[in-house]
Length: 476
Image 1 (cartoon, one colour):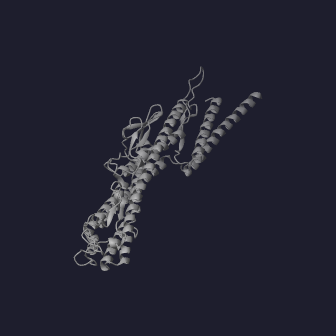
Image 2: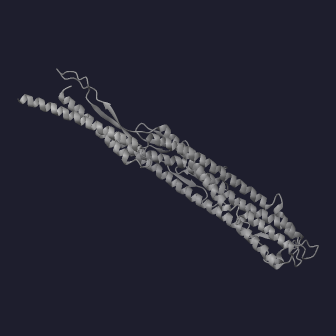
Image 3: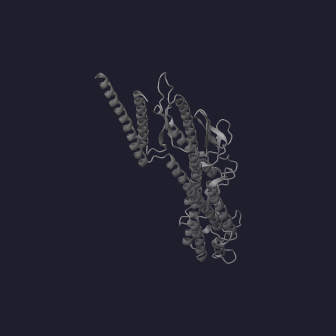
């Protein structure tokens, strides 16, 4: 090795150590940056160059070179993060929808429909105990109106929740399109920068983060291309292809469906208007809550709640009216004279039963509490109506069945959400162990690379001293 060759070797060592220090500094600076993947300098020994005429072989080599800066990442771990994140997003959204409905029921609570129905039957029993009493009749009518308003308010809450969920679905679709556009733009920049020999690691971090967002929203997966770009696939169809994207949009009824003729809410490709098949993610859960497992416009957790209130209204009116029509009022008016003497009625037959339910009588004169054979102050009919709450097919029983079902559904979704969150957390921990910045490790690397830099500088200094000695000896 010539003296000047030694300087070249030491200089390459300085350059390599400096590059390693810069990358370590970048890692430290981004230790708390979400989505950042730690980097390491790849070094390789320089092979011996061709020998010039009369030169002696160099058995040592020509130093070291930096061959690149690598991201410490694992594609398998990243794929697991995306898949578990998709499942976690699906069940979290499903649990939130079920919990919203369950909370709106106010069960068990004094303001819930179950409690109000119990109070209604008690009011009828009081009417049976005090036939013809104006005060008791007023209390009965007041409680009946409370039941009707409770049913109406419950239906409205379910419809409003559906409307809010649909609006959130439209927002999520916009996020999908925006994120897909970001990935396409990053693909273009990465392809161009990589072709010119630039460092694209930070851009790759941004792109991976965007893919993770799409995975959580749609269950999307990605595949790499030879030019450094990636394709993003949703349900077997390409959402991002290199530097181009397709658009998604929400189709179907924009208003809360009140009949089976309404168009089901769905996610479609903007260019072909065909349905998007989702493999999971938040969007799949949102659509399920809006359209149900059978993809019907009146399905889903919100519409099922509204239908439960409709059923409660029609069942209550049907059963109470069936008995009420058999009686007579305190004035002797029979329940079957002319128009049936109903206790509950519907303001319209074209809208939801829950919001149209109302109490027909406005005073004790309209309540048919007697059976018409034992005098006007007989309590037979009132007592029979009071016992409706104890029947196996009572409105209470039907409502309790629905409450139990939504409670079970909410608990199941919450449990699945907790389980999937644990899996997603474990995958993220594994990803951080591979690509996360460990400040203790980076501190150790700083010391190592600092010593390497100092050692290379000492070699240069030593060779300089040798050269100085040789030159001064020649001068003497």
